[in-house]
Image 1 (cartoon, rainbow, N blue to C red):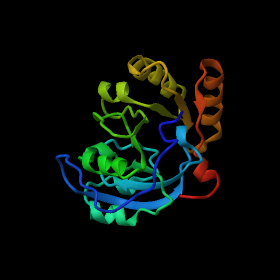
Image 2 (image 1 turned 30 degrees about the vertical axis):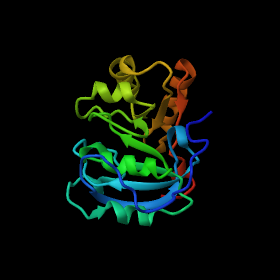
Image 3 (image 1 turned 120 degrees about the vertical axis):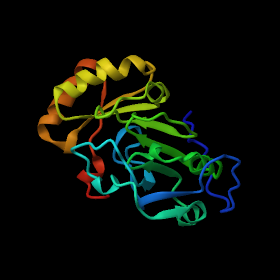
Image 4 (image 1 turned 90 degrees about the vertical axis):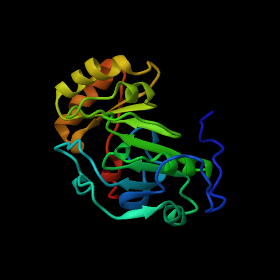
Length: 216
């Protein structure tokens, strides 16, 4: 049975969390959409896109998040902005773990939301939540993050991306963790590479479905 099978809706806005750390964060945007990538593809999700990323992927479609400055939003305001029906919350960026988000994750979890964190794998990670590691090779990877991953979502532009994942990532990942190959920008050449690798190694294909259906 899925860990999300009996998720309860938010009960109140007075989340008291005994966790050290800040109670406000730099946030680029928040919006309700459909998760278009990886394990939770098709799931209605409330996205909290954090500000700040020192990884700097050249193909990044959220370069506005790179700067570490931005609006600061308090925990209470985040909770009040959450739609009742948004039972799955995706913490993305930027790079979420460049900020201390322990209190945010714990509060969302305790309030009955399922939580997913999308990270580059370049920083140590923590929960509660489902850890989606999308390995980026522009900074050293954290072995701790790879070991903690609930899924690997590898962006693929060239064959070498798959080879580096196999050599540098998978040796540290639990063998039962699903591996998704995601063609960069849904490009036809990258899609072909991913399909071939999925058929050969048993990985799963992850297209950016939200872009195909025209939602953010």
